Amino acid sequence: MCSNDVTAIGVLQKAYRAGLRVPDDLSVIGFDNIHLTQMTTPPLTTIQMSCFELARAAVWRSSRRSRGRRRRSATIHRD
Image 1 (tube, helix red, strand yellow):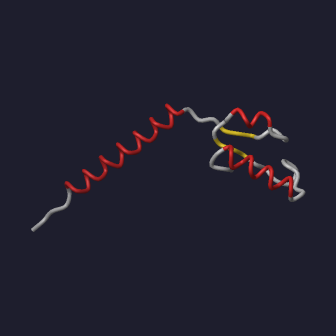
Image 2 (image 1 turned 60 degrees about the horizontal axis):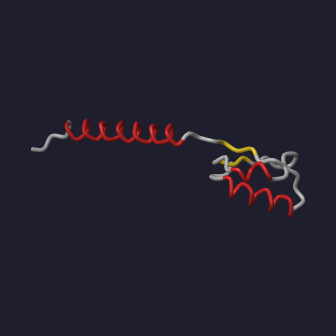
Image 3 (image 1 turned 90 degrees about the vertical axis):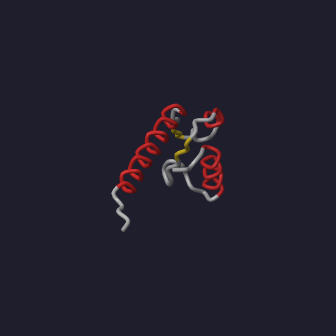
């Protein structure tokens, strides 16, 4: 699993040069779903994630962390 499709394409090229067969010897997955992946040999498996959903998850997680910090700081007693 690569962090982006460009890196995954690089892995495909290195595997080819090393004599490895994808997907027989090695599985490669990219992350972005850029148009270039449709032209690779073999075709690259890639994951597309909605930017909206990714932003929503980040805001939700950040909000939960912030609320957790406020609760912990409210329970600290200073003498």
